[in-house]
Each structure stands twice: as C-alpha cells, then as structure tokens.
Length: 162
Image (cartoon, rainbow, N blue to C red):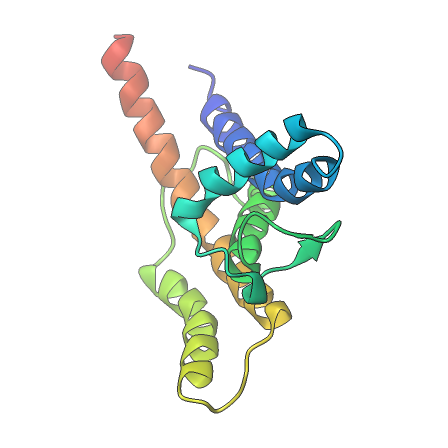
C-alpha cells in the first residue's frame, strides 16, 4: 500500500464532510425555486444532525440559511480540514506517533472556559468565539486522528492483503 493513501483518504473524507456543511444552506437557497435542491439541503441537514445540535442562535448563516452545523462544530471541522492540509508540512504523514495527551486536553480548555463562563452567567458567548475555540480543538485533534487512522489503515490492509 502506498504510504500516502491513508492520508489522502482521510483528507478527502474531511473535505467531503466540510462540503456538506456549506452545501446545506446553499442548496436550501437554491431550493427556494427548485424542490430538488431543497431535498438535497434536507438530506445534508439530517445527515449532519447526529453530530451537532444545529441551534440557529449558535450557527452562522449564508444565503439566509444556517450552516449545517453550529459555529463551534464549524470551527472544529474547518480546523480539522486546514490542519489536515498543513499536516505534511509539519509532520511526516507516515509518523504514527501521537503527541502527549496533555496537548489534546489543553486544546479543550478554551471550549470549556467558553461554555462554563456562559453557563454560570459571567458572559454571553458569541459565534465567533465558539468558532475560534472549536478551530483550536479541531486543529490539535488532527495530530491524534491521522496517526491512528494510518495505523488502522495499515492493519486493515495487512488483514485483507497478506
């Protein structure tokens, strides 16, 4: 198996997922005049619903329609996409070692602080802050997901092709 194949599969998967986030409102916009696009939009929103609450007040809007996921989830997935694209510039795509778990925990601190300070009434969070905190977590998460995906791909390949 070519060593870059798992990385490309991972990259394409993230890219397709992010595309669904943005095609949902665009298809809804086009669906105002064509019901076929409305069906596509509904499919995208329903597909994304299990991974996000999709609350309108916590979401960005384009074309007058909300994105397929909330602002924080948008940040997470866009962070994952951008850092997946940059990953080969920072690490060898075949390096299956993960950083210390403390980096992953640290990347959750901004999300936690944002959520807790809003929950206890110290301040009201904004979609921009939600996006940024999600982006930080999504970007760091890639350094754990890609090595694990590489390792699982290698094991699956050797299991089916000795």
